[in-house]
Image: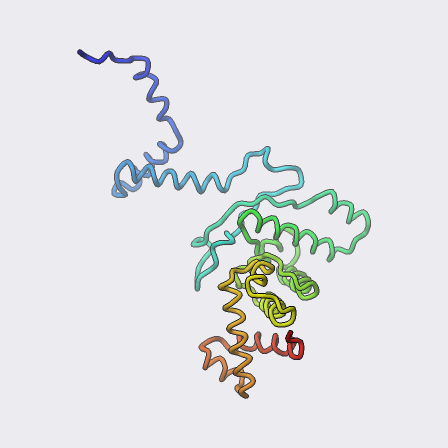
Length: 257
């Protein structure tokens, strides 16, 4: 018995295929005809849409005083000579201006203190959303020099012993030594365990172990009477890094728990 044709379904089914995903798959097939068959093209289109959706927010998701900003993924540390075009990015929503910020201005709170408060807030917000801001990001957002941003945050970290979750500290791409100093201070002065140090400094346990291990090796070489250049040669690392750890050792000398 012949199956009866459902003319209504047949006429309406093409409308179901009028999607952005299929439009992307068609364009991919047109521009890159050797990329593969329909399943590969569909997969490519899905991945493109996934990236697009991660970087777009509906208008009603962003409130007055907030901004959208593209940050580096906190789970994508840099590699040598890696460019930003080769880096995983995420879009985050940041509170640029809050009622508390306005109150601070009306109360004549010094600008440095207000900038610090904003920088801390946005660094934590970005980190909670899976991203990390650099000093250059904060410089552009807050309209101050990036060197000034780094100075303010490094000073805060030194005074409080708390690491700010920004790219310089999370991905170890900054020139400062504050996060290394804090990690060593928490371990050797406060006597905290490596896993506790990792939680408090937004670092992985492997990263903490690496910093502490390198510090121990540099300190051992120093106690053997080796110079920074000799230590760098033996440990196969840069002289600048050795000098950083030597500076930390100077500050922690006599404070070991």
